[in-house]
Amino acid sequence: MRIVIVGGGNVGYYLVKTLMAEKHRIMLIDSNRARCERVENAFGGAYVEVTHGDGTSVDCLRDAGIYHAEAFIAVTGQDQNNLVSCQLAKDFFGVKRTIARVKNPKNIRVFEQLGVDSVISSTARIAGSIDQELDWADVNSLLTQKATHVRVREALVVPGSPYNGKRLGEIGLPKGMIVVCIVRDGEALVPDGETRLAADDNVVILGNEADLPRVISAVRGEEI
Image (tube, rainbow, N blue to C red; front, side):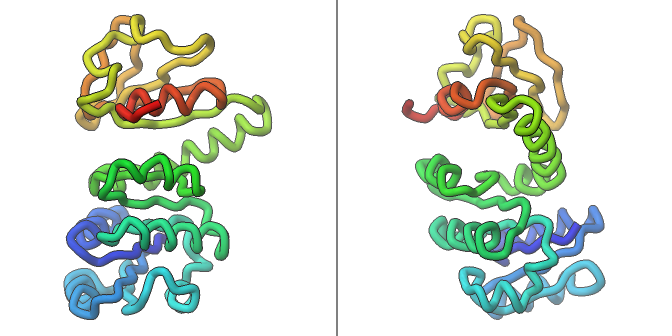
């Protein structure tokens, strides 16, 4: 897969290292020349190319070869730059999947409302979400065609979530909504009503599109 990454700091560096091991072809963009040289010296070659430039610039993204990208990841230290980069990638260049790192959890909902496909704070989860999120996109595409109001969403249980520590059978999900899968410590679990949710669980939820935002917000411990 061809992936463009904006941001060559520590998060971007280890993301490149992780993804290149999976044989993805990566183009990294960073406005800091020293960070570009660090990545190029460590990983430059058949699978990794580096562009020194501004990831919020249309010209820079074009020169970096974004038209060939199947996924776009923005992991700079500035939430606003990550948002702008992802919006350009999707709306201007038509990249199928955009993923943004956020430092401020309050920005998660804003990013999602403005069209970023996946908003993630953990480096490991960003790397692990590349194939998973593309697969869920395909599932949602099918659901859009066959079941207009049904969607699949994924969310991370935070310590402050009202669902943390509760059994699925007692959290009161809306009628017709189910937790399809729980990813815990790198292992996928198929839950039942007795399964108890825990902080840092990634839950995959299938349900009515109208009900999902409220449940996702509760999982993430956000104000509703």
